[in-house]
Amino acid sequence: MLGTLKLLLLGAIVPQVKAICPIYGVSFPKPTDLASSPVIQAALQDLNNAISQGLETGNSSYSPVISRAAHLVQIFSASSDKPLFEYYHDGATLGNSTGVKTVDGHSIYRIGSIGKLITVYILLKELGDGYWDIPVTDVVPELRNRTNWVENPIDYVKWEDVTLGALASHLSGATRDRYLPGLPPLEPEEEPVCMIFKDPKAGVSCDRAGFFRALDSRQPVYPPNRTPTYSNTAFVILGYALESITGRSYAELFQSLADALDLTESSVTTPENSRGLIPIDTLSTDWARDLGDMMPAGGHYMSANDQAKLGRSILRSTILKANTTRGWLQPTSFTSDERGFVGRAWEIFRDNSVPGKGVVDIYTKGGSLGLYSAGLSLVPDWDIGFVTATAGGAGRSWLPSYIAEIMFPAFEETARQQADAAYAGTFAATNGLNSSITFATEPGKPGLGVTSWISNGTDVVATFGEINGDPNFGADGMRLYPSEFSTKGADGTTNVAWKLNIYPDESGLRGPFAACATWLAADMWLHGNLNMQHFDFTVDADGRATKVRPRAYKVDLERVN
Image 1: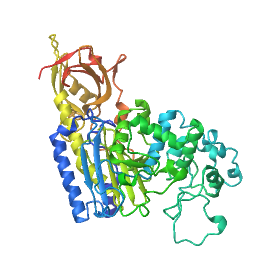
Image 2: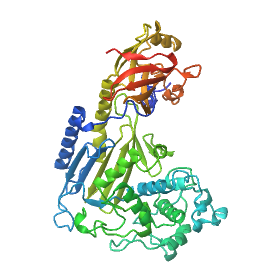
Image 3: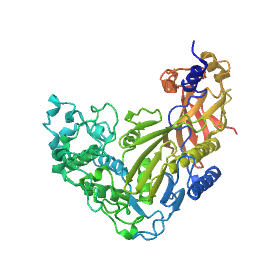
Image 4: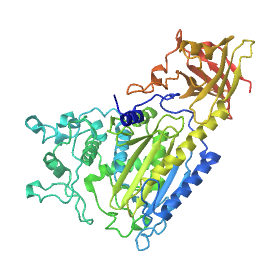
């Protein structure tokens, strides 16, 4: 028999299905006009207070805070070109600097490995998403005919198995390209041929030819496509692949992206010191270090305003096809932590703290270089993002953690309130038919709940309760979620499609196979070739639904309250 402690531990870790299992993705239409939301404004004040307290005390709920360092935060939305929130802290290291003395959205700093995200963005802009499965040996001639792996797979990468997608997803198995001090002295032949010099006045020790000559001196970490392992080497190769395919230099490709997005405070070369966020001095910060051919792996210069522009452009699909963006905002592999995934340059974190939301996936890319630490995060469910950066010391993670803790519930509640104002209410037939339906939202619950539904005199909610064997079946078991499809009407209205999710309460299920299976029933109920779960709302110019048509029931129901 299991002991009491073991039973308690098992009870703490065994997965259990939630009473309401929302479909993965948005629970409500993405919120807009966030600046006018009282819920958002109250949360922003709380966030401002939390950041200020952290900087004043040198501590936060998540980590110590280095108050001497410069800090900045910007929160932005795809629905507005203006920042939703800005916070700038000068710290105590700018006084003797040759750069800016006051931090703002125009201050330029180094973004480190966020450059990897830019490299993927460049590839998608220039080539589209059809190149991910192409072997790197097809486009990088230096990697062809490397067959040492046949005799010695421990020491040599099988490059023909490495695709461009694997490079972008940290799945190539290639070395990270780092070294640590405190190890035995190296023989001359063991010294890395290509490395970043320790002297901050110097840059990188080799060019493209030297890089590929040295590549076989580094052992693979894992076989390609086995497990994600962070790799700067992979992104240097991806940069070379881009140059080979396009016939243009990486600097030219970056400038093309910057021009397309109007990034006027971004570059791959060192800008004027007077525009820079340079704590202490230019040498100790790595402000002026030339990374040369390492640039595709990171080291670009950007301002917070330009980082926000970059994030908005992804959320808006400004220069990419919407389908390409949707494919990019997906994980490509797992990590050993159920909260973390890896994408094409993305570091994806999963948050489940928003009441009723299920999960919120945060698509992030962090970067560190010298005394700079920066991050860009996107949350597609609400079309929002945020920029965080620190110059003069480590400790950036406390800022995004506070944003998630304080702002995420506010974004979801704002989306719920806007959906309630637009869609909640009773809709009924006006031709004498006994048909009506009532939708309602509740704080802490996802989607539109169906609280009542009569079709030609039949209680539809009760009928589905009988089918599912649940006498208490109600609004929690029948909820509508946006499908994100819409069309414009000739009369100024918009036709907006929602999908009804019909799912019984299975909260009693436990164990590793008790995962929420809502996705299995997303298109389950049919009447002929008509989907019984498809609802078309007619929304007027003011954004309020005036009519709903449950498509399989062939009736238009007009709003009555």
